[in-house]
Length: 153
Image 1 (tube, helix red, strand yellow):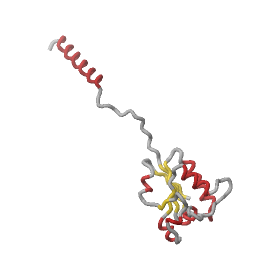
Image 2 (cartoon, one colour):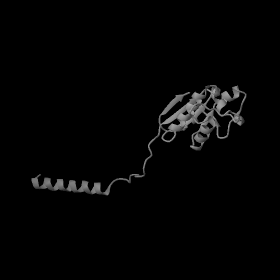
Image 3 (cartoon, helix red, strand yellow):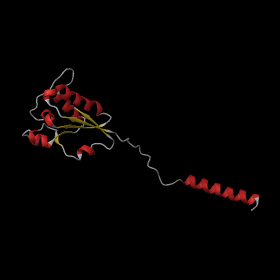
Image 4 (cartoon, helix red, strand yellow):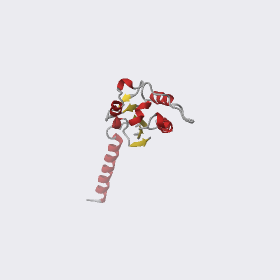
């Protein structure tokens, strides 16, 4: 093959590749992709007897909720905080428990009570405050698509 033939062949390949690139491939979805947010699982096992612990947990849920997926789960004595007749817990500089729970629900943060703990306390779903749900195991994983960080109180 002569030098002229090689140059012509190379030119044909370059032109072919350039035209293939200009045509492009399949369309690419250019819509913005929302990043996967990590989840924060707030576990509260204490009740009104430990106001600082309860109110700190609720405050942490509020702090995390704007940029994380948050789920609040109450068991053992924690269920006493989310009953319809629960006392409004106060301590130090924290907003009260009723105030914080209402704000979390307004923010769309799910709050769950342990069904076994309700039963052990002689209570049922009908005894929960408005907006509080009975926990189901799938909710523990379905509330976020990211990693799950647990904070225990």
